[in-house]
Image 1: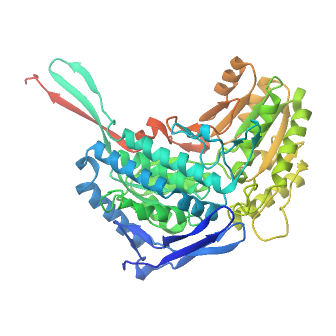
Image 2 (image 1 turned 135 degrees about the horizontal axis):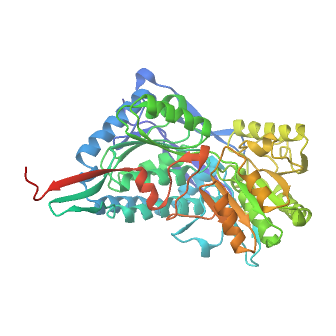
Length: 543
């Protein structure tokens, strides 16, 4: 393996950001950027700007040999310069410093993330604090007259990185020296206690729809708990992970603690899932891929698996809801990040008494976004950007065709935005949807809402639970007793009442059913990255 892969420079001269960004395109292994192993060099992959469908740059692709080398480096670090060899307070200091370095380079990193992902949103500064987060799938803006709008491009990336990444790393920096066991009373002649120990080498595979937030959701708790990590970013959006990799040494991490291997799922992802020296793996992505990872983990060394997978989340709006607020939050639920969110509120159930009024208001929200669609760097007025890739773009259009074929009515949208280059799809609303339709059952991962009318509470609970997914749900009602009752009745790991997509770094997030295993965020995430040892001490027993 040779070091010193090429450093490229990306020049941006746009109304929203002007500057040059230097980026190493190699793999980050054992504290340095390196080229892939020549014997299995998989070449490079072009990284595409979805607004123009043109390449931004290309990055090196790793292979199973590179994973082996990264795992070996991580294992050596864990056994010598990391893990329980380093006090939690020191691990926390290094995580804190990494967060500060990202903060110091925020403008540049945010520009890179916006360029690669073409994200679109912003929200009022008074909401931007360390405990309240709206990550990659969440956004809203409260403008001076307190009305809600969706979007705003470059600012979205800055807010996502500030709250989804920086705040998350700082949160787990604070936890690093507070991971405790328990003393358990047994008898006067024996003492017993537990301790929470890191697994050792952890694998992580993250998605393309929120690259740096997902980086922090995996790296933060894993490293705080004392693990070393080998992380695969999405092959579509690796740029910000590589930029942050250039800060890891400066933050003071020993070589091998954090390793980043670019590559495809069937090569690098598969190698991580089946590697015999990785004892824990975490994945965020599709349910289909999650099954493959769990199978590979079982067939190799029965490694512990955490999965945060897909969803088809119900958003239930009762007659007594604040209609104006329900309409706005429904827009937040489905249209932010162009609908590319695991917990998107893509099934919207509206009680019959307000159905017509809801459709009228919700249509206006979608049409406002359609009128303000474009390159997120082109104007501060851009509210809706492109889909992340050509594959995703075509997939969403195929679902729209399916909805039309099955007899649903396109209330608005239902087509690509224009004949220009880029992967733009109009925010789409389907009415006359039945629960059995494909668009009401399968995850679309795009700006497509299926609106379904209901009569009674019992009916909507049954329809909402008629899915293989269970990631999230929302209930809108002024009757708080009903809100809590219905939230408890829905099979979902997260429930919102009179809001949508409002997460917090200290509150767990994860799914029921086929939406995943384990939890991200909060203290609960630390349980994913530690194992419990029970110690029994004889202090008086005689034979």
